[in-house]
Length: 205
Image (tube, rainbow, N blue to C red):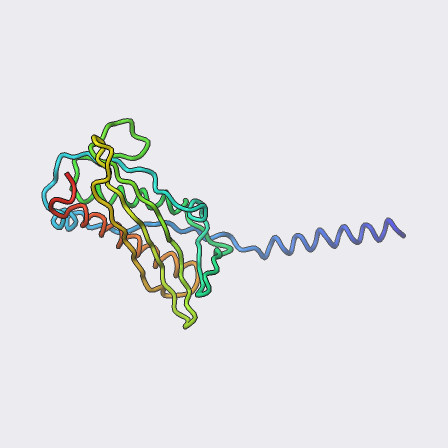
């Protein structure tokens, strides 16, 4: 009798586990993929110079070094969407985005990645403070990207320029898809603002 009850218990657990496994949806994966108009960017930034700029790894809190798509509510609670994630950590996705933006601008002689062994005239450091979906009490939401940049003169090892950019883009829906779309647009805005800032006369060497 005991053996029979044990077998019934085991079979029930297996069946329940199978049902749970079948109901878990596959994860939706999103990335940062802006569309660049390189010819327009080069016209806006003006004449190319010979300076080489090197990208430093983007710094961020632990929450921004994982692949979770984060959202925050009006009470400052932070969570992530259960079945959606980024293709890579936001700090790495944005590093690539900023590098591509600077390359497409035609402003510099070369833009080199952090792992490069080549020397550079300038170093671009950045700190990511926010990259999340902000959900408000009134039912609206927005994607928010906040980054501070530092331009370092590699010869003197001093900061020659620094600026913080914040972009907020209204989201079309209060879910991971709406968050990804809004954050893509907000990240693109920050990248374009970065390029325009570095192109200002007398801003850098």
